[in-house]
Image 1: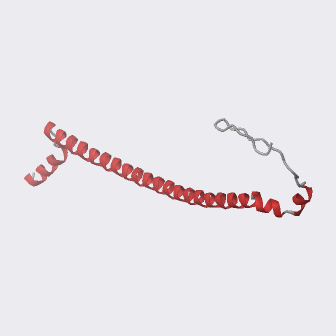
Image 2: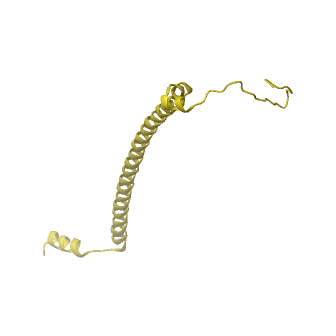
Length: 122
């Protein structure tokens, strides 16, 4: 038999404990590499998802702050309108109110204050 054929035949079926350990180590390194790569991919996807959630919440907060500011302006305008409607000049200029009011002639009133003791128009 030819020596090349014989060595080729032995290479296929030859296995030693050192070769098995080396193959086992290579398989362990490869599987560890794949696991780490998968874990990094998952963490990267999680990071992108968290960034998206935070950006969305930031946008929502800005929208709510703008809406709050608009409502605050509307509130102030309504308060001004209410004070205008309740003002004394409007009440006095209202014809219905002035017709119902009676004029007072020679009023008598008493003013008593804790720190002042006197009487007006008595």
